[in-house]
Image (cartoon, rainbow, N blue to C red; front, top):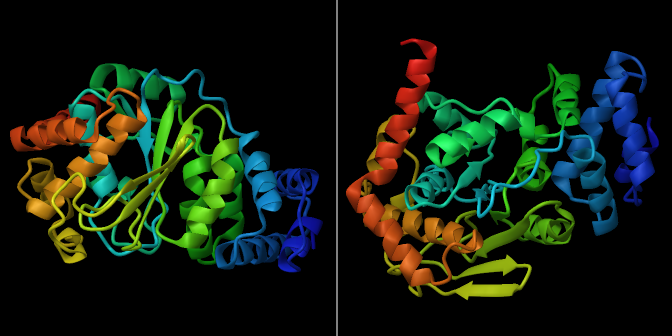
Length: 342
């Protein structure tokens, strides 16, 4: 077995050179026979998805991946990404709703995401059902952002080594890969933004990403966590944002009314797109509306285009009341149909 997974399984540190060697051999399929490659990849991911390694190993792992990804070019000024780690209570696609709402109030958004591995639908699954196209290159991302004020990135933002890792696992289950991608993927994606808001559902994910955030090139990272264990800001929970300038505490009710429960934010698997579009028009219930607006306000502040929570929150509420985020989503859907010639 390669030294990297061997050391990881034994709980020993893995340095940058060892990780580089692992990815090189995986790329050139020189780890051993196909069954050996698959077994080593499965063992490595099982370890990473069960217990994240100590900070130095984790930082070396992240660097070994991001240095292999194509550079996205300069960040779009004042732009922001929102993406969570998953793994918390089941909610509908709040981060995608917040992204569209933030874009509707003039915040440039370049949003990354992934498919669902344990939940009803990830952001990519939702966008696919809505008929909204993901960008296929950094140039396409820039074009979408210029035309619409928002772009949803495709898998090109992730290090290609991750795709090879997933293919090596086939036909084994991808759940360990999904757990790994959900936890570390938000900081592995090369997204051309100046800031990023990432929600963390568990203390383990928060601890890991707090170590990685200062080493994430090209953007400042805000990490959100709350006492409800959700990977989004919740108006009825006590939230904390860990930023490069210190912690921001948002107690329940400090920005949005502290009413409602997680039940009000539950996904609607039998009406995924209908419920989502209804929420974008401010008609998904008060709790959903306040939650979307709160997260959109966080994007506005992270981008640097707003400095006051209540002002940004009120503007997001007004946009939802006007249905502007839904109109934006419908324009994106229509644009996809026109390109397809439908």
